[in-house]
Image (tube, rainbow, N blue to C red; front, side, top):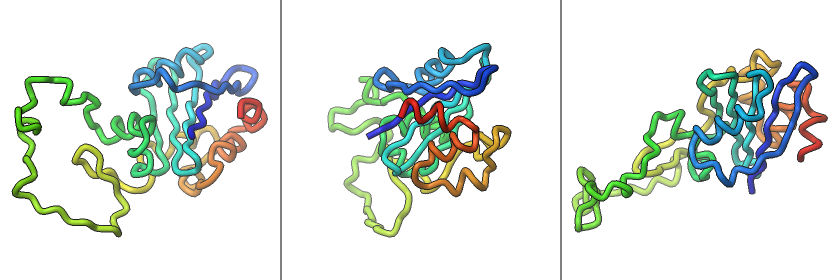
Length: 183
């Protein structure tokens, strides 16, 4: 279960709104959603939280590139919305190679990919990373750790958040009451 909310800074303080992510398929979609909530190109924060497994923050200010932070990359990589953020942070291409029929071989593998016959696979239960599409995703926090520093939440405080992170972040920003109205 996901919870997503937008916090937009205005002259009068923060305004909160819950948001549906059903139409969000790319980082551009998420960024556009944030920009639509912006008042005079002020700061907009998009929070996405999945049942205390991970949370992500997207910060948009005007037409600047978005800033992103994810609390646990390995957990987020297993989530469709988390994967959108992780792909951007790790510089991965979001295009699905299966969409390009020219890259498919009749044996079911993509050009340049091993067919798996000559490879040995190790099973390591102690690995804290996640593997998606053949790439390892690091465990732990990734992204801009100072994403909220100028708003009152230091890097150290951000990294220390575990459960109910959105409430603690909103409290540090002075937006706890407005966030609570959309929860």
